[in-house]
Length: 230
Image (cartoon, rainbow, N blue to C red; front, side, top):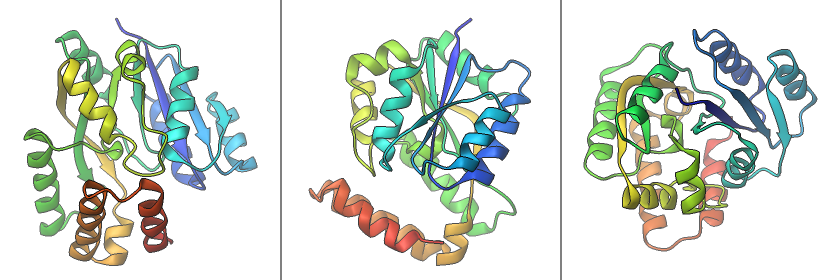
C-alpha cells in the first residue's frame, strides 16, 4: 500500500486549517505525514500544527513556492496537495490509493461547493467537471495528488503565486495518466457568495485568458488578491 504525504499551503487561514487537520486525523487510515507550509509565520498556526502533530514549515507568501517546499520535505510515495480551506471526504485516502493502484500517476477530486448549493453552484460544478474531463486543467482546490517520483521528475509546481499547477498538470499528462476520482472535495463558497456567482466566475475566466495571453502570474496574483480580500 502506498504511503501518502499531505502538503497544505496556508496563509492566514488558521480556523479552516484546524478543521481540515481534524478531518485528516479522523480518517480510518491516516496519512504517513501532514506538512503545513505557513506563509504568515503565525503563532496560532504553529500551535494548531503542534496540537494535530503536523509538521510546520515557514515560507514566504507564494503558493507555488510553498507547495514546492512541502513536497521537497515529504517522504511518502504519493503527494497529496490540499488547500487549507478544503473539506475532504472520509474515504479520500482510499480513493487516492485505488487510483494509483489502477495505473494512474496522479489525479484530482471532484469540485463541489461547501454548504447549501444553489442551481448556479450546481451548474458551475458541472461545468468544471466537463472542463477537466476534456483536457482542461484541474486547479489546486481540487486536491491534486501524484506519485512523488513523477512530481520530482517533472520539476514540481511552478514557483508562482497563481496558476502554479498549470505547467505541472501539462507535464504530468505527457508522461502518464491523470485521473478524476468521484469523491468530492468541498470548496469554501464565501468568495462567490460575496462577489456574486457569475461575477466571480467571469473574473476568474478573465484571469485565465490573461494568463494564456502571456500576463505574468505575479501581476495576475496582485489583481486577484486585490479582488479577493475578505
